[in-house]
Amino acid sequence: MTEDIKKGLLGIVVDETEVSKVMPEINSLTYRGYAAQDLCAKCKFEEVAYLILNGELPSEKQLKNFEKVERKERNLSKTLLESIKNFPKKSHPMDVARTAVSIMGLEDKETKDNSPEANLRKVMRIFAKTPVALAAFYRIRKGKKIIKPKNNLTFSENFFYMCFGKVPEKEIVKAFDVSLILYAEHSFNVSTFTARTITSSLSDIHGAITGAIASLKGPLHGGANEEVMHMMNKIKKPENALNWINNALDQKTVVMGFGHRVYKSGDSRVPTMREYFSKVAKVKKDKKFEKIYDIVEKVMIERKNIHPNVDYPTGPTYHLMGFDTDFFTPIFVISRITGWSAHILEQHAANKLIRPLASYKGNSYRKVVPINQR
Ligand code: CMC
Image (tube, rainbow, N blue to C red; front, side, top):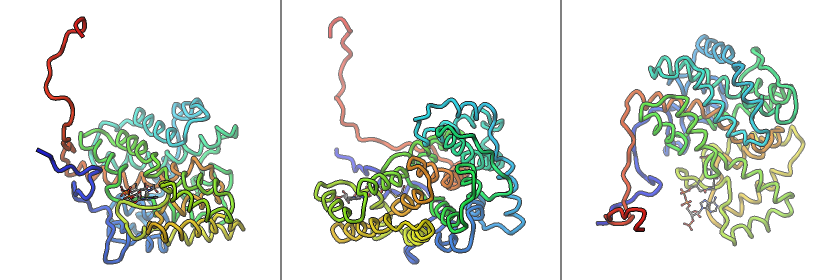
């Protein structure tokens, strides 16, 4: 009997969620009912992080308290800091993020406690410490002195400060904040599903986030923002873009930063990120990548009817901000910790072990021949 196989779980609804949805009626990604672009226009990242984790936008008092906790947790244990100093300098920062969260799990006194209250406390620690761990590695591998976090800076400002030693222009900080808002959550994507699958065995939140980071690393998921930059670097200048993309399509290359499992006629996050990419390019007085961007996008739509996803504009935006290319996906991590955590809490609240079936196509039954007779 041939079973009906849904490879890649294509089109399969496996559970319910209240965290986010792409709403077709407004053609937009929404978090807890709010359109992501509306949140970008009216909120800072911390408000959206609060919304995703707690279900409602914070009052001024609630936000102040949330920020107070996040800022208080911005420190690394001696063991974690020493470990990061000893990581191979050539490690991919995604592996650094994964290992750092795993070490946090070794150290956290509440690792075993899966109550919602304990999980929220652990989320705040992971959320606050992961950027600090990444920024420390950013400095260490360049042979520079680690910069301690500053408690009077916002989440985004502090990340720039810890990486570069200064807070950039407000337009740059806002563009970064917007990218974090757009990256924060996207329903049952592969890393979130990984986190929920790990949680479904009643494992702990550090393990679920560690697994989610490994899943996000792949180029078909979060790793695409780095691949976009590698592609733009290969293209080098706008004059080369048309030939490059036409050749790539002739050779049936998968062009990174394009296509999406859910959006088939355009990712609703792209127009917002495209606008902020342009603002950053203006501040940096560098329009080269915007020109390459437009040419590649036009050909992809004309020849394949495939539209860009959010990784397409974030790649060159982070490059213009001064980040090393292999830090683009780790930036995605520091934001997506919020979405993953909300799903982990949701999974714990109404858990069912995730255990699909497979259609077996291996050998039929056979007897074991002892080793001396094989
Ligand atoms: N470049 C060229 N062709 C493409 C692309 C692309 N980026 N995306 C899809 N196609 C083609 C694909 O070759 C296939 O053609 P055919 O039917 O002739 O074999 C058709 O479109 C359907 O593609 P698919 O891979 O079956 O679609 P999917 O829903 O399984 O894949 C995807 C979605 C995101 C994996 C895929 O579009 C892709 O590999 N994109 C490039 C990687 C990327 O940008 N990933 C980031 C995703 S969004 C942000 C995130 O989640 O992190």
